[in-house]
Image 1 (tube, each protein chain N blue to C red):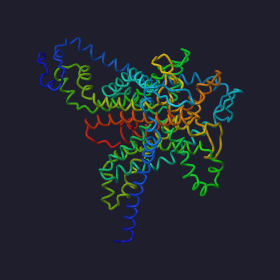
Image 2: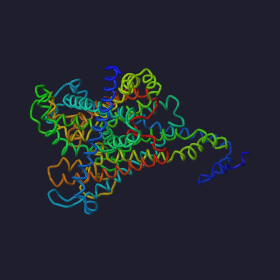
Image 3: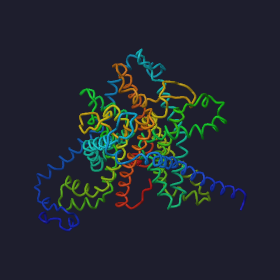
Image 4: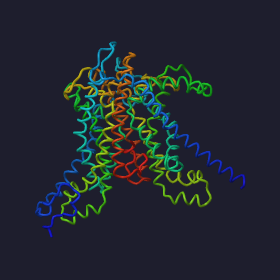
Length: 284
Length: 334
């Protein structure tokens, strides 16, 4: 073999090693973060952490019960508003989305998907906080809903488009009107995928902080009123991490473990649901 | 014919709709347009939201924009007491931290995408792909927490000495390193955007026809040469689009950056000095903005951020769509 050929092969082998190393380097931070979360956070989690509200700074003990409940409420509010609109938009894109309007809506969904969440926070503040005069969980939920809609629209569209056309044709041939075919045959067949998309979207918004800073604001006390300011896990982590007290930092790590566990569970559930339906063909 | 309920078809489904076929024709004709109208109305929410957000930011930011004019984006003075607002340091900080992030993230992400699509053995693709995916699932505020307590000490201990030794003579690595800095902001952003760029690049590379590779290999190219000369050029537009998507994410990223960038209205060349970004300024100052002009200035910052990210994103989508036709890349980057 000529030296040139050897050199080319050597280069090919080297570059394979280089891209493999880059891939490992890319996932290294994740492993470090998981390690640190377990190392620094897990030890601070006990029963009180889940059932008690925060105590004044400087005192030991206390928990994040208010933040956990708050996160759940704000996310549920977002789902109530965002899910119907997101899924409806996705259905529109899949069923009637081949024209110019479909293209436009699809494009806007993708563009809105990349809009900074803090900007959405300003928007929600102007409409739901400023006129009322006080911060509220409702405003936070609305901000998260806005973030949810474009995500859901696109995943729903993809899932509905996966439904084989023969199924639709069979229903139409049996005399089903189009709307009924769409809702009871097509959407129901795609339901698993739509649920997956919903789980992914919930996992994403559950960790959002920026749009809640001046909508839900945060609350030191336990509150379930959606007209009042409300604490969420993400807001709590932000406050504790940037605060001056050792005890707060410890609590921030512990809260981060809870939040990560929540997000991971949702992400894994979504992945599991997808694999159930489509086999494991997708890697990312 | 119309009387026959679709028995066989419904066999696997729990609820039978035997009533459907006997619907009167008029009802059927009414249902379809109504369904279409309803979905169209719902789908109009998104365009409406985009317009409403843009309009509202413009209206809210107008007092500040009209008062300071062009100076709003060129002046470096941000003084709430004297009611003088110039956003140049934040705009600078936003762009520089995002570019720094790209500089680090693009090689990592592209390497990952190439490895996953072209070289990795089958059994390895799934786990690595999944880990990259999880990287996108970590909430921003957790990255910030990790940045404050782990990344910054790590930068100080491990990364900084060699950087100072080799590049210490440049203006970029001069001065004291207190911790929160442009460098820390750029690095945390890089970690956060890697999964987005990797996911989209991977999809772009997968969309490159196999014949492209086979032709190169058939001509005697090595595997790397096939990737470098046949696959990457084919997907170039899409990869540029993926990079821009990452850039858009980095520009608008808020919490993690706020927590590690130092939040100071300064404009300097040193990456070791604290800086500020537009998103961080809004996050920090919005709820304490006491005067209408202060508030308006912050909304105007939001408007600048919105316009820039929308533009970057729109261009990126068009580039990606050209390659991976119509795929919802990015929206399922998790």
